[in-house]
Length: 167
Image (cartoon, rainbow, N blue to C red):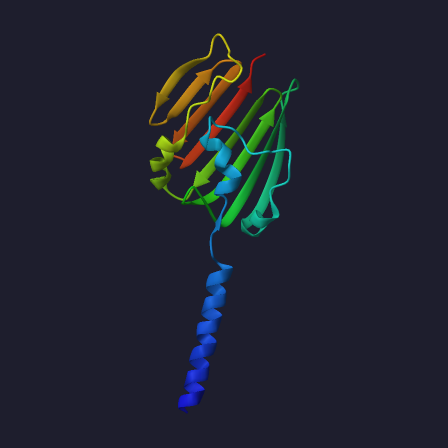
């Protein structure tokens, strides 16, 4: 009787350990790391690395046209992902001619503590008109050879990076 109980206990512990491994969070920080340096975006032309595929539970692509330009929006729904140490619900990538936006959606507002880690862009092109128009706890706006905007939005639990090239 004792040995049957012991075997059953070991079996249950083994299944619990397997379930915990299967539900372990996957850290996507390496993929989104460029955002910390002047709101650089990950290589969006390349496929998302395979090691992150297990947490992607849905992908929805949408196109919007106003007759002159085409906006492409892709939303990735996630389950079990973290980034910068916080649980990530989804991320969106939007792009149209001369403009791109990457937005991360977190489970709650604790991500607001990340703001000091996000650095201003660097004036790499030596743009004569490079200037920091805003820089506060909610983000920044920098102009130069284009416009770079970082936005921390507590209401929608998101961090967004927008890059627009000069026309």
